[in-house]
Image (cartoon, rainbow, N blue to C red; front, side, top):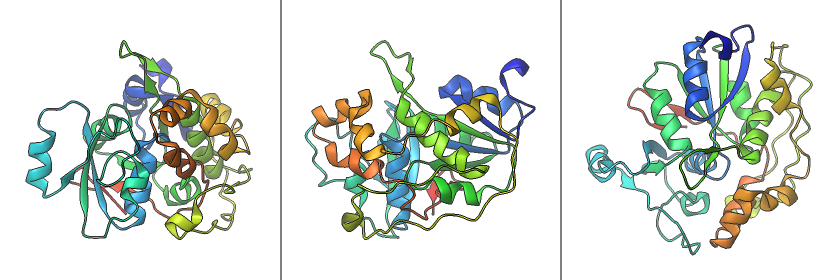
Length: 268
């Protein structure tokens, strides 16, 4: 795996489960999981409310049992319809959580990756467009590996999802100047009581792998217009989840830095 671990850089980037394994084999001390549509955006919203989120592998038959053991609510699958009356993978469904709430959220990409990373004994953070700069400011243990979760083709193989590259790039750009300019316009600030966050002070230079440098330079400015046009965005729109896309596109509106604790749970 040495050829793939980007070991000569402080900031590294990869895709999916195999990428996570390669970065861990290369000795990273911090992992940032990025799944913009929708897992890490949902985690950001929940932890921004002070709630706890346990990531769990998708289709694990023990999810309900584990949620009960932890005293958590098992998130529903939210496949169609835009129903936000119960906690689910939808970020909007988590907007009214309280600090005492705990949700166990299964998902095939972000949650499964976070669950795997939690077992590796490294710092694990949830990053997205909403909290990219906040996560970057919180990273102290280098080297760091930023993992874009991606999506799945019907046969189960990894589909590279551009929105996850954008989210990873936003975190990486904030880790090493010059940082990309934040463009939080178009976010649903009123829905969450949010305001755009001021620009972070400059970070000392970090060495970036070519892969990390590539995604850091490729974050577009007009995210609210572009995110709905991605393949993942169109898929969610057709399923009735357009509001989730708008929430996910609001860049740097959140101070939340979800971090996995010793029990495998993201907490603020």
